[in-house]
Image (cartoon, rainbow, N blue to C red; front, side):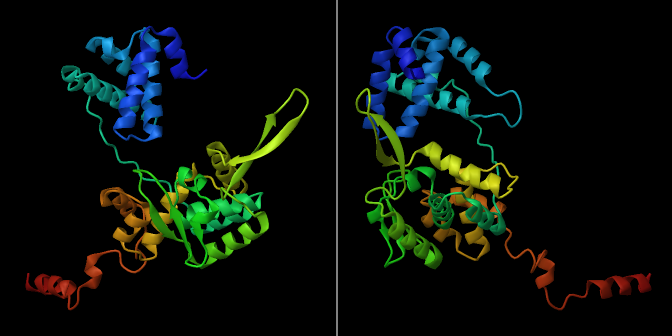
Length: 316
C-alpha cells in the first residue's frame, strides 16, 4: 500500500481532498512526477497529524517543517522542498493566501554536478555486462538524455539516415531532435539489427501468472530502476569512485561538449532547457582552455612591468 493510499484510508476526508488536488494538477497541466511528489508529501503530513493539511494551524505546519528539515549539511533537502511547494499549491487552490505567504522561502543553493572523464565513460561502456546496457549508456551519454527520455524512446524515434533521435514530450512537454553522431549511429544500427526491437528501443521481461500452473513472459518498457542499476553496475565494474547516477551522464555530456568548443546556447537546445541560466552551471565545471591561458595578462602585448619596476628602483 502506497503512502497516499494509507492516508486515504486512515485520515478522514483525505481521499476527497487528494482527488480534488489531482484534478487541479491535471487542469494546470503539471507533470505526473510533480503530482506524485507533492501527493506523497501531503500524505506524510496528513498521516503525521491525522488531519487534512489545509485544516492544520500555522504552528502545526511550522513544527512539522522543523521536524523534516535536514539538520546536517549534505542531507537530502528534497522532502522539505516538496512539502513546502505542495502546501503552497494547495493553499492557492483553496484560497488560503494568508497561510501561503507565511510559508518559508526556499533558498536555491548551487551544487556543482559530478562529471566523469572521457576515460571513465569509455571504461563504463566497455565494462557493462550486457550489450543492451552498453548501448543504453552510450545513448545516455552520447545524447545527454534524462532517464525518462531514454526509457520512452521507441524504434521509430531513431532516424539512422539523418543520424538524429526524436525525443518526444520530455520535461515541460517539449519535443526536440538530438544528433546521434557517427559512432552512436553505428552502435544503434547494429543493436537494432541484432535485437530487432519492435516497439520500445529498450525493453525488459516480466513473468505473468496466467493460471495457477502456467507462467508467461511478456516484454514491457524498460523500468527506471533497471536503468539506474545498469549505470551503477557499469560504474562499479569500471572502478569509478565518484558517487554518480543516471543524470551524471547528462551532466558529463554537457560539460564535454562545452570543453570541445560547442556554444552554450546550442547546448541549451540539445539538453532541452527552458532557460539558459540552467545550462550556465556547466561553465563552472568545464575546463575550457585552462592549458592555454591561466590569466588575461598572458594575452597582453608590449608589457614592460619588470622594466618599469627596475627603473623606479634605480631612480630611488
